[in-house]
Length: 306
Image (cartoon, rainbow, N blue to C red; front, side, top):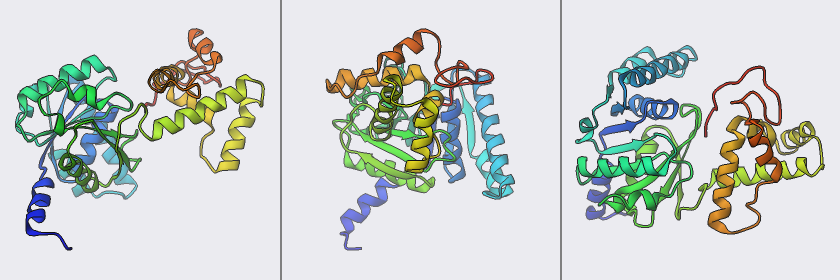
């Protein structure tokens, strides 16, 4: 392939990841752990309480069952994946892993504390990744002594359905760490895109939420009814869901906070939420999660995430 022996050795070392840990046994964490276990990795799923881990493992088992019923995996695949998983509440069980993927609450203070603890616990060559959808990787990395081995790996929900992973470089993330992350994604059947310079929202959310925000402006300014806006986008652009429907699914409060974050970072008026969005949030109209947003739903259901 035109690579020197030295480069080949480098690549061999880069791609040698065997033991994976996932922090957080919620929907995202369980999905990431499932993908890694199916690919043959030994995976430790860690959360604060054992009942949370049991819930996560049960979610994985149920999802694997659905994939089996659809003929996407075999019974042997399911058995091997479950056998590759171990649950723990003890953070020290992660001391020998090669890659940690953090998938806990989207709170900078919490993430910084976790990464500082991981840095003191994990081996010096271990890569620490965050599944954050918008927070600064450089700020998270600054709490560690391995800023070259910290990056973002943003999966999409549900993990088994979406092929994309955004890999986000912090200011000091090394090329070797990026290559390790990209090879891991390839091995678990995902397609990675590289965000070369972090910015709020990275690629997908920065574009998607700007798109949704513009649709809110069209509606709030009386340009068209909400149903017509969604229908126009679905039929005119071939999208499965209209922007206002998508907004309700994501959660209007989450959209508002994120767009405000864009505005704070870029200081650009195009990242300005319409006042209607704030009014709806104050009224408790958060979308699917509250039972009412741009549309009304039969009953509240959990926010379906990122």
